Amino acid sequence: MNPPLYAEALPFPLETSRWERIPLVIYREPRTAARQVAAEIAGLIRAREGEGRFAVLGLATGSTPIFIYQELVRLHREEGLSFANVITFNLDEYYPMSPEQAQSYHHFMRQHLFDHVDLDPKRAHLPDGSRPRTEAARVCAAYEELIQRAGGIDLQLLGIGRTGHIGFNEPGSSRRSGTRFIHLDRVTRQDAMKDFQDEQAVPRTAITMGVRTILAARRIVLMAFGEHKAAIVQRTVEGEISPEVPATFLQDHENCLMVIDEAAAAELTRQRTPWVVGPLEEMGLAWNDAMVRRAVTWLACETSKAVLKLTDEDYNSHSLQDLLAEGGNAYELNLRVFRQLQNTITGWPGGKPNAREQPRTLRASSAAVFPKTIVVFSPHPGDGVRAIGGTLTRLAQQGHAVHLVYQVSGSNQVRDEVVERYIDVLEHMRMNPTANCDPARVRAAIRRGEARVAARVCGILPERLHFLNLPFYDAATEGHRRWSDEDVDLTARLLAEIQPHQIYAAGDLADPHGTHRQCHEILTAALAQGAREPWFTQCEAWLYRGLWMAWPIHEVDMAVPLSPVEVECKRRAVAQHESQKDIAGSPSEDWAYAAGRQFDALGLSDYEAVETFHRWT
Image 1 (cartoon, rainbow, N blue to C red):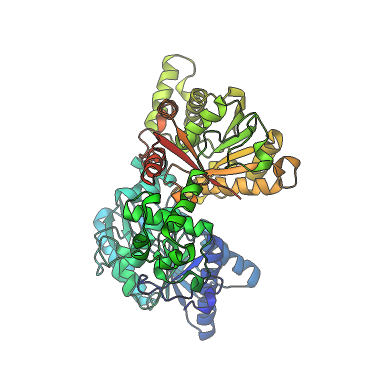
Image 2: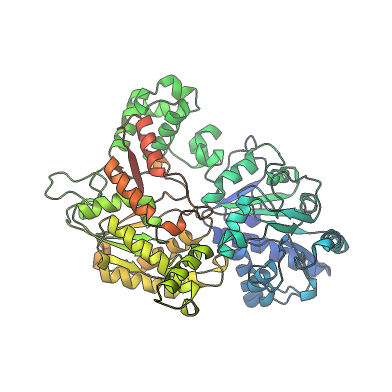
């Protein structure tokens, strides 16, 4: 049962302990979750203050707890929450790392919490990453002793890495481990690249609290936000305890709560296949069109059958008896879902000129307009062509006025050696002496040049390219960025100038670096500003994916099949972004090919590739 403090969490009355081995609460979005966790922390601080005792907090870094720290700062400034009776211990620190460096967790905590509240600096403890390597064992032992001397940790705040690490306890960590020196996993280092720009600059080692140290806390709150955490959340909550996923050790803690958003909960049994848990009506759900399509496509994948080949026995043996009873029989259900999937497929994403019948994917108010003014938003240069280069080419060839908007410069994703190569070329050609080549400007110029050529390959006219260079991206480090009204106003002015009939935007909120999520939020706010304008009433918006994950087939509202020629064109456009070829963490799988295979497996046409979209409402 949810604690009263977490009353704003999404309800789920059914018993789920059969699958879930850690109590958890789910929120629609991270800020609400963060407010609730901050409220628990504030309650602990005030309770200890009333008892004349210190509240001992274990703190985490990274993007996950930032909203919590913002709320704690607000409670301090507006509601008088004092940190005078607080002692803090942070989980970890990079090694080697000076406390003054921008990437250090000392700097992170000062920036987001310590410098904004009345916490005594002498009571704020972090591992020291600046000491000689020969002193590492002594530094770790001293940190453990400090925690014991403070009486142990009352509440430990945790995030979770994609490898399942808590703190920097990487896969293979022992549950008996204490504070120690550790070598970082490659995935962890790739995810940290957002703060260092280049993977080679990310430290290979760190000092971290051990699993035993974390489990000794009297209360643990583990948080995870975003689609990129969904898989590891499911393994942590529903999987067996294993050193390969250190977070699973939390299953044995008697006072641990997991707090997540809907995106991070996507792979949990209760979210992915709720009919397996129990009757939908007991969960406040219903067998509407969306749920039926979800269940039937899942069943087809589970049985490796085409949709039209599913039988009554398939439904009955996969916990879908209730659906079968409501739908009448397998034949009717299969046909219903097959037609829904079929109606998502169109070769005319912008509408067909002079046609009696327009694609079913388009609303009537929009379908009649031809040609359309279309805006495609690409968070980084390269994202748009990589995800929907075929659709871009199709829209341009079919006569629409396609505008391609690059939201950020992407300069931080150009490696130092690439910049040096370009500077050497400029110097050799005597176009610009090395001394006058600012590497930051060269990085941005490289991405712009690549984007222009790639757009030309797709048939986009140069005058329809827009480089917004949103200011939030130029903050010191990407992990600490936050968009502002200036970013929204720039986007809103461009929309008002172009007045599009269609918008395509990135829905890849699984982006581990956070840029896509912020670009999405900025565009959402800009569209809210334009909601009263005449152009907005007939504007349709579509979300694409294809960088870190694909739309589940049941969420696809429009599917654009690509011919081999269009696939080759897309491949040539992507190849123009040469500086991104070897960037760590760059997507390696082309989701359009995977979507084509899935449509084929479900019994629809056998396409070379398919780019998929979800209607943005």
